[in-house]
Image (tube, rainbow, N blue to C red):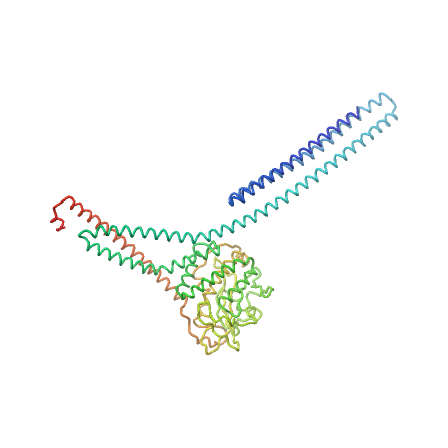
Length: 582
């Protein structure tokens, strides 16, 4: 009977083991089915190329993963509870059997010694059997746990692979979307212009038909006068259109640059960039505008490859030397956490306190500086010599970016001239310092090392640098605690661009540069001129709108009068006298 009971217990444990293996196989099949479903979802997402579908799939995947983890925890908990219950039942059965055997031996043998020996032998046998069964069951449980751990690790590796594939696919989709948007903007412009030309041609045909009918009447003189008035109106519109061409061209250039730079900025920043482009269009010649366009495209292409602060510093220095042709230049970043300015030059990081040198003065006060470097009392060799290199300006670059001749460098060298402006973020906070250095020229040349066009070019470059520092987290490095889009006021731009008319200033004596003449334009007068022109154009547009309304009223009155005369002719028949008197 005891052996039969042990066989029954062993059979029950074997059945439980088989059920556990079946459940484990079912879990593996469910995992394989889930992997196939995830693969199908991934293929559908790749074929559709829709970002919303990808996000929805990701949500479902996270939900499924969470559900699977919950199921695995419940299964492990049930398995552990089942093992505990089995052990407790075995112990209860063992206790019952031991009590029954003790009574049987007492009745059969009747002796205490025999009873104790029999009970001890049977207890030893049952304990041995139960220990062997328990060890075998524990080994099976350990094997099942190892299988579960292997399945879990395989599942996690599959999840990591799927996440990497999704990230790569999302990056490809974003690049494709950006390329499509860039190409679509030009197509929309051409389509709008084509529709405008078609509507204009249709209106001209209608006007010609109306004039053909009216000119057959006795009111030809009035209509000829009307035609002459329309001609004068079209000439005035042509003049206004020519005046507005520069503004529309600047707005078109702004849209192209915004698509290339991918800067999502507010309305105030877009107005600022429009003002800068309009300033260049008015103040520079046609060839200089083309050169500026080429340099701005070069900036957009160069800064797109800057993915960290070190590469951004290198790209900014290369663009500065290409556009302004300075003998040297650098970009110093502000670290307000340590109250230092730093840069990366010749493969090493250079840090200096913010209160030392000319560069530290610009970073601390946010004021532009144009001065003789060695004669300035704020000059500190350990800080400001970072801007110098072992070469002079490139001899091959005989032209500046705006088209004029490059001044010759003195053989003796002379005191270098430093042009330094602060780089601001979109909230007007100074986050870096951009400077260019060029040697003094010969005294007989009567040409300044820098002029307002160089200052404008340096200001444009500082705008690009500030925007990319915001994208790379420059606002956080500067201690502002936040990044992203903001606005830049026109007063900040006027402060960033120094007036170069009086030559470099410093703590020491003035050099022969103060005798050199100023450039063609001054930034403040140029801004005032632009504002006056804008106000004048607004007044002309309002006057033109008012005159157009009056002309429409007169045209309606004349058309009604012509219809009335035509009705009189049809009704009166032979009443030519009335028509003649009319």
